[in-house]
Length: 284
Image 1 (cartoon, rainbow, N blue to C red):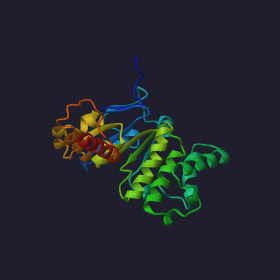
Image 2: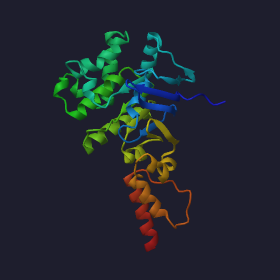
Image 3: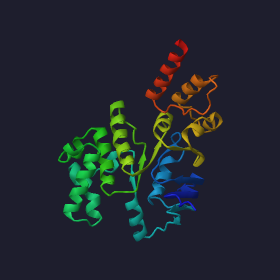
Image 4: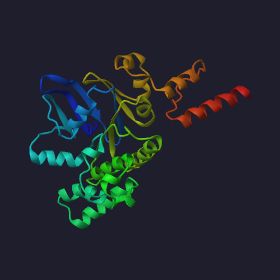
């Protein structure tokens, strides 16, 4: 019998004051060691879902399962839950509050009751992982937006969560900042951290995630392999999304070649390599 998913959402319901329905009948599965993209347009309920994943919001119906067991909402359980599931908000200003980067990142470990020596070690590891160790003594208000993003992530990472949940992690970053952040997150993933991130960027979801969950009007329309989910044009139309360009180009490239079963390229470099191979074959 296979183990239960690390975190799962079943039939989730949530409405904001005034009866504004944000989530309804939502199912989602988060498997250990994966990178899951929660993909949908603005207003589809992505952020509301993320706020449920670490107990910030309490559902009006349905349940959330951690290691196959329904979670409770008393203080003891919430503390344990939030140690395992760390949430990084879209705007780093909402999470950075201490005078310096080092002080801000140390808040979580010290709040866990760790000694100053243990907290200092975790802070150093988190800053190094996000490549901002040189900013430890920098005032948080003097950081660039990208540096603030990484500092906010480091503050959660220092608490060593099993699952790192990120709301639109690349929003507001220039291409270099996106690459730097994704490289840091990839290293965390390879070290064993399960990653969940929301985005409206189909190219990011296709190129970087192991699984994709497509959102629309507060529910998950489909969850699964990026090739299968993002190759479903009818599904994407329903969610008001466009297919990823890389996938469309790869499908055109393979059309009529009679070679089914080839893995689709998931990066610009892989697509260019496939194209060069095709050109060599034609010129041979």
